[in-house]
Image (cartoon, rainbow over all chains, first blue to last red; front, side):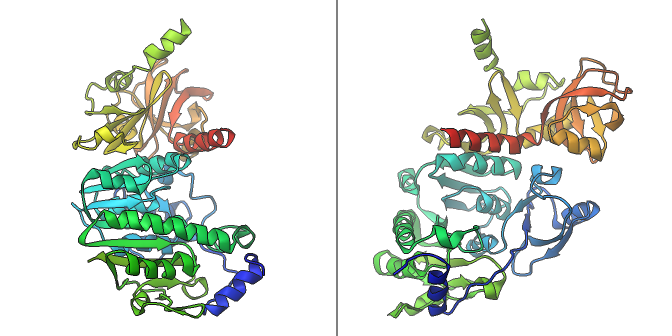
Amino acid sequence: MASGGKEFFRERYERLGGKIVDLKLQQVIRVNTLRISAKDLIARLAALGVELERIPFTRNGYAVKKSRFSLGAITEFLLGYYYVQEAAAQLPVDVLDPKAGDVVLDCCAAPGGKTTQLAAAMDNKGTIISYELKEHRMPSLLMNLERCGVQNAVVFQGDVSLAKGLGQKFTKILLDAPCAGNFLSEQGWYDKRTLDGIERSSQIQKRILKNAVDCLAEGGELVYSTCSLEPEENELNMQWAIENLPVRLEKVSCKIGDPGLTQVFGQSLDQSIALTRRFWPHKTGTQGFYIAKLVRV
Amino acid sequence: MSFRRKFVGENMNLSEFLAQFGIAEVPKGELVGRSYFEFRDRALLSRRPFFIGKCLAHVRGPVLVPGVDLLQFIGKKAKYKVSVSPEGEWLFICGRDIFGKSVVGQSDAGIGDRVAVLNVRGECIGYGDVIAPLSEKKVVIRRLFDLGDLLRRERRTKRSNRTN
């Protein structure tokens, strides 16, 4: 039996209560409040003929309704006034809700969308300790931190397990895990993904999750997210986490998304997994996404 | 000789870099890896971070290239500045030199002066050398650095990663 291709995933998602839609994702920017206010940026881009519309379920996200040029190369972009970041991808930092003065561990940081968002939420106060394993992803991470005026981050190249050597427990951890992605995030996605690959990815995520939880202080919060719709990378990982790690799940407060699945291909999962949030593109109008919030017990 | 000069050049520090613009006030930057950063907490320095605190500048061969924040500092403090039109700004951040017709304001810069290039909003978008009287229509400022370098730097690295 095939374990990849569009029909395979269509059938799989239907069994989970979802479906495949041909949706063209709108370009979304997040105002970088470290550099400019939303009001000033909107006025400035309007003068260039760029029309923005507020995305109500994000704090600083705006959909680009009209633009005659790419928003990824103009002066306003280069000066770090905004970050091009998909709407659902803006939510994990809002869920973690870091405050000025916090010390936050940021796992798998590149290309820096969420790191720059953390810094903005913290008003550049406190500390973000970021890890990125892949050397080839470091330049884009560093460029984005510099561009967006981040001043409270310390970035290391390596696995997040290295954070254990810091001798410090964190009260807030963001783990935006490397994942298989979703059919809206990449052209030809269906033909590039297989169940084997997804399962391998799930194993990597479990390892990162364990290392991250090792760094979490008692009562501390860890927000786990992926841009995947595959339960192996989401709900099943959470089931594994609550069975094997000293954590419990807490409700993810989001204005969009469905409760996490508690029935996956005939398997009943812990009811607390319904506290997590799953974003089916046909319902949210965003890319596929998943967010869970874990608290160390 | 050229080999030796290259490495002498690599030792250019922040104060030498800023002196080119007539700036004597120097941020307290420290070289970490191949970039200058301004930071207070030294506790994590021994773990060799790639980025720490506020990024000021990067060592590139014999010269320094400024970070976005240091570039704005230069834009405020430089002895010589020119303002360019939106069209000139666009060409400049794409890596082009500046034509006299794009210059909409200046601070008495003459041939040979190193000038901060500002847009009409007063944001520094790079710098260059004046090579002809600014009143002429031809190329009057030779570009040395512009903000678009951020993107070109990233693309260069991606290309080099692909070939490695």
